[in-house]
Length: 164
Image (cartoon, rainbow, N blue to C red; front, top):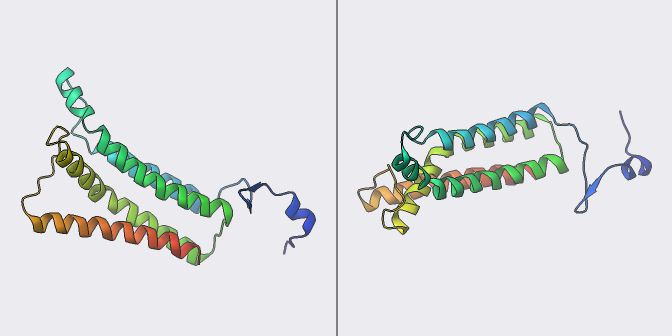
């Protein structure tokens, strides 16, 4: 088994007070990055298709703010997981299970996140930014908020569990 000596530790890169565990990625990190990339792809392909004319292009571009907000939120979660991976790089069964749970939640969370963001931007713009998701009652809004909040809670809880 390898022993960490002061000499070995001094050779590691240090970033923001943390010694980075190395440059190579584990298989679970590669899988995690691919899953996050797939989640972002799901955000993009959930659009109705390639525009056939200028008016359809303009209409499609109205979805950019909701996509940007959804993309940003997913990338915040990805960056947090990447930071954990770079700092600790744990590849034990518990960390792997938590990471797989995080990936599962992210992939399920993509559509509620997109629906939440398109509905939000449609509401604050008075309908200028379109939303194909129709909310017809206050209970549906509450339900959407609960689903969205549960997703955020599970992702944040996974991130928290990785640091324990």
